[in-house]
Length: 204
Image (cartoon, rainbow, N blue to C red; front, side):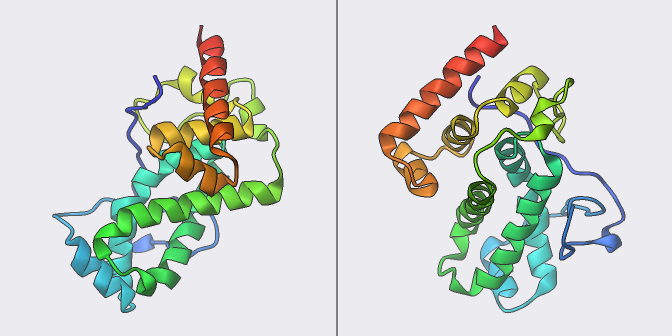
């Protein structure tokens, strides 16, 4: 049950009320629907030249896919996950000119968002997120989620949860996880084993 099939959703609203560059809770009031196919190379190229409409198209296309990753890394703290998403896109906006291959944008953005989340958690220190301690547990902001599984993941110790999410959801190798989290490859493997064992116990 390591790979979740849950799909992200966002709250529908008036697209004219886009708050892409506001400082908090950017998913609120943001219409992430997009009509037609997106030409990635053309759109990334236009956004790199300062086209805000092109950049918002990228946001609409790729923000929903980052929600489950960041929500789990935040242990179900939706506001924190939204802050990370905002920060990731702000950083992406400022760094698009350095991206040599527009086709690499999705992977580049995901890694950037993960770095934002992990850096923030390191600054905050390893601790259990309060949202995970609520009696009912956090509720994922996407339909069809396995609540028992998601709440169990939210209750995992910080590092064990991070490794589980990066390995199972982001499909990173232990070497890549070690580089991102500044831990040894063996530590990553041990934390994954710990996470799986704890999940098995919690879901039994």
